Amino acid sequence: LFLSNKESMILLTLILDLALQFFIPKKNLIKYDLISKQDKAIEDRIYDLLTFNPNLMFEVPNNQELFLKAREKLTKKLIFDYVSSNKKIEFVTFYFNAKSSKNSITNNFIFPDAADFLTLLHLTIVFKKINEIYEPGANLFIGVECNFFHKFATQDLRTTSEMTDILMRFKTIIETMIKTKTFIYLYDVYEETSFFKKDFLSTIELEKFDFLSNENALDELKKSANYYYNFVIEQSYFPSEEAAHNFCIFHSLYAIGYSEAIRKIKNVDRGLFKNYNEKILINPRFFEDSHSDNDHNEIFLPLLPGSFTFSFNMLTLKMRSNKWHQITYEDIIEHQYKEFFVQDLAYPFLFTEKRFVGDGQ
Image 1 (cartoon, helix red, strand yellow):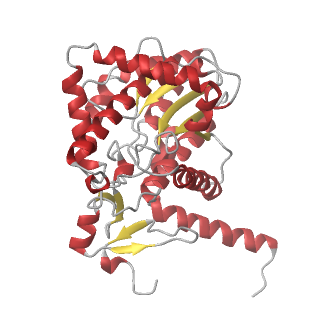
Image 2 (tube, helix red, strand yellow):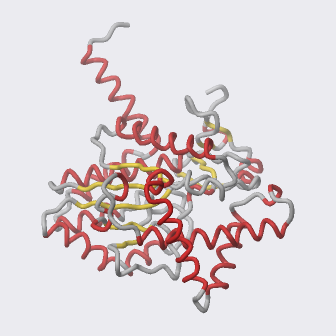
Image 3 (tube, helix red, strand yellow):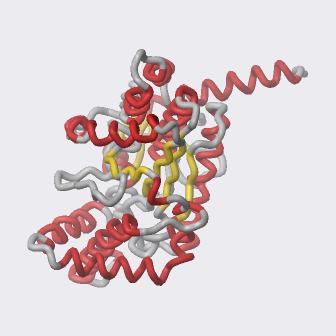
């Protein structure tokens, strides 16, 4: 079969469209267009795109909508400040890490999978639509944290570097799928902070000290450490239960210092932190006591509305209903879900209900 160049392009477009609809059904894709074409002010349409829940995930009770509603006024004001000045809007966030190493949760399938792909796909579509309706444009800069926290993920730097590379490949594939220019930029936080590593690490230590001076610090630290102990680390990796608990406390305190130190970084002349203090900081991690730092343009947005905040901590199932669901390895064994591999990835990209995929496919 010989195809002309035009016929080849039509076939490629069809294949890409089918691939896209595997992740987001056509009826859901149309909604991005409908939002961007609403009869509303630009800043309202931008806000609606940023907070749009594409209804891809299996519904799990959460307080995301209430959380967003409580902060809607502040978020819209920050967007309006850019729109009224006809300035490019630049957002920055910090996300993506190794999955839980806990055997019952991931069985050591710790690399980026369909949940991370879906997150990047949704964000790429959102920013493509924003750039279609807002001429100065908008970009999102994402600091990938895999390498920075490789020790806390109990992984070597080579492994977490491979994770970072896979995320970069995901982004390139997605841009081809939806035929868009680059509006999402991924940076390695480990590399980007290396240019001022001494000052950054010193700031983390100062922030840890400041945190411990708070009245409720120990209760908050214990709560965070218990989360890591129960849902992230594999206890058998450590020589004793006490060692595992101490590791979780140390990591929790370090992560708190890191999250505050990130806000204190000043502009640098390159990369992720270029014009950093003029960018809108997106905090994708939702807690009841989450707050905005008045010294930084900070908003709270889930990067994939409808999913768990820490979606990368579990494995990803595509249900027969075409919904996506976050599950544990114990769930996979119990229900005999089927592994689904894709080319060049040596681990399951997702899991499916057994009857969804025929044998040998």
